[in-house]
Amino acid sequence: MGLFALPNTLVFQILLPLVSPLIDLMFVAGVANYFYDKHFHPEAASAQSFEKLLAFFLAFLIIDFIASALAFTLERKHPASRGDGWLLFHIWIQRFTYRQVFSVVLLRTIKRAIDGKPFAWDKLERTATMSKQTEKITEVV
Image (cartoon, rainbow, N blue to C red; front, side, top):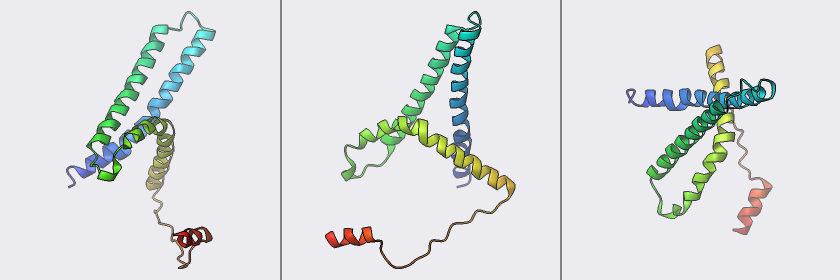
């Protein structure tokens, strides 16, 4: 198990999520640099370099989408889940929002592990009662 599970976890749960925001930041920095150069140093601004930057970032997004689509198609389907292909279009939202939040959480977790602080689960106090909203729902059913 350690031969496959640990490297898989290391690569896909730690390394790639750490690199992904760097790609986004480098893209934004490259675009900002191009427009800065175009405004202040027009002779140094290269439209070909900017086009290459856009092409590589677009290729990255397409590869990311294809990998997601492949994972989505390899997912075992439940008979009741037909027509869920539209969920694949949410990958674009996930690419620009969720991944940044996940990266922040990952960085904070790694920092906490390096600092040697323990991880503790919060204890949920059990009261054996339902909320008013849940009681209303169960009364209807």
